[in-house]
Amino acid sequence: MLAASVVLSPRAAGPDDEFIRAYIQITQADNLAKSAQKSSAAAKYQEALNTLKALKSGNPGWKTGVIDFRIDYVTKKLKALNVSNPDTPTTPKPAAKPAVFDAETARLRISDLTRRLESLENNLTLKDAQLKEALSAVPSADETKRLAKL
Image (cartoon, rainbow, N blue to C red):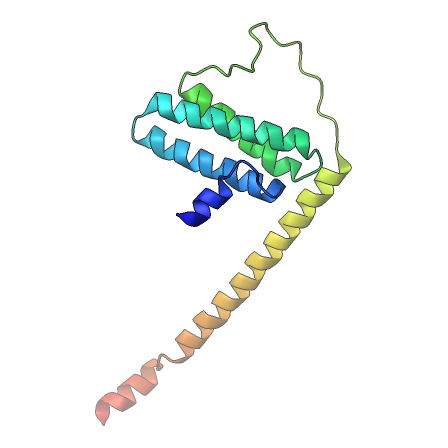
């Protein structure tokens, strides 16, 4: 409980702490939504959205893909609760501009996916070895018959 209060303190040490605070708010909102407390969940989602937007504006280069994913997640949850975002303008948005290719974000995403792929391949190799070891311990049909005769 003490750790949660430290993480949720208003004077967080850096972007990691701010992101953790937003993540905890999202988790709390998810739990409130599951227990049919829509207005409380919406308030907590809005709080998380504000934290994420402040984090993004205060640290423009910090894990933009992760922050954008969480902002999108929270926005979808707010829409699902039929709560409009007060920061959203009521006038229709102009036609969307094509997405700008960000080489740095793409490079980081590729690097992350490469690491995940390597990890999964290592896990597969390990599981394959464990399976072979387990199967080698099983006696063959001939050995089973021979042991049965003893």
